[in-house]
Image 1: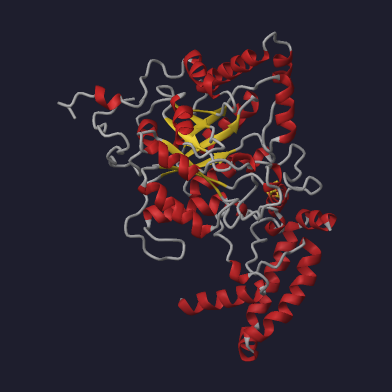
Image 2 (image 1 turned 120 degrees about the vertical axis):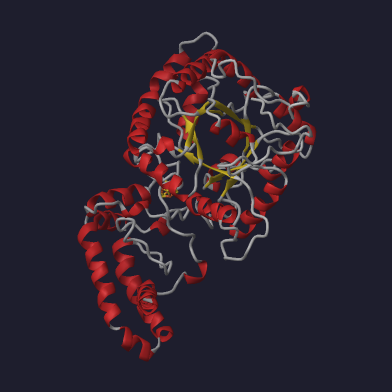
Length: 338
Length: 154
Ligand code: SF4
């Protein structure tokens, strides 16, 4: 989506419009009422910036914002701060994920200021997976905050212009605040209330865990609508292609919080090309999710299949002809109206 | 110990009343506590709390007790020390992501909240980040002092 006040210099943010909290593209597009697409970028196990640019380029023109994960699955990779620093300079709209697992309140507040200074306009507050599931199970789990107290803290940094200690911030971070949600984890009847609580703590958008069980999700959304939460928060629903029936089995028994129903696994197992079928399932799911009232977009987590994101977006038709930002698009904006 | 935790959550309604009763009774003793000195009393109270709350709810003595909000499930038993509800990793059978042999502390807190029979679920209150300086101090005495401080302001 192109805006008439699109900056010509890559890396510059959009002006903050009245009623908006950030200069970011994600907030702009959501508030403009579009069905939004975000995707998760795979952070490299390397210090080479070219790898980061190449991975981001896979999404050019297909996603509104990119999530930089923060040691997801408790594995060590390039940091979300580093990824965001590189990519915001090229104009990408970044969602910086911040996990409470590895850093305490002093480190996190410093990162929020630093990230905002680098042009990060959206921050996703997470509690994080336990260190035990990662490649450094002997590490010290920090968990000084939880996602809720982190949301509260960052919102106060932005709106009340002070640190958690009460000390003044001279120029507050202009960030759009997000949280994760898992509609598929027990206790299921508490999950809508949990989302309400995150909204009360400061969440303005949520990105959910993978949705493979549309029935559970429909029930969840009907409670969300009854409570009116969908009018207070933008809901982006997690989707992604499964590589095979075997990997789906592995994910559901080893990755915390991912729920995959049997019929999906049977569908994959029965296909000639399981990888393609995984993409088909993802496209179907995306289309079904788009029809649910109160959903504002999808969040694609195509772990190790990032090259198929463009195909998923195109085939599912979720953009409905909308043209998305890509590097260089500003040059197409008519300078006369700029 | 897990069995005791579960029992407490199931009996959350009257245990919460009892808990508040104790706090009320202690608040009446404020003038006495003040004379003796709160600091001097802290160790003894902590010991009493460790025995009683330790037995009933596996209290971890964080010194800023919120079990009134959690249906008597002590959040400090959560391996991620979450104080605001369940993480996304709770197992399908309601067991903890990190310690599969244990019921998720927050699944129990939700059960406990439903037992309370209150109009609004206290679990919905957004708890501030833990104050690490208070760990290992008496939560009861803190509550008494907080109440008195509020009284004095009014
Ligand atoms: S499953 Fe429950 S007890 Fe375990 S870490 Fe998550 S919230 Fe805490």
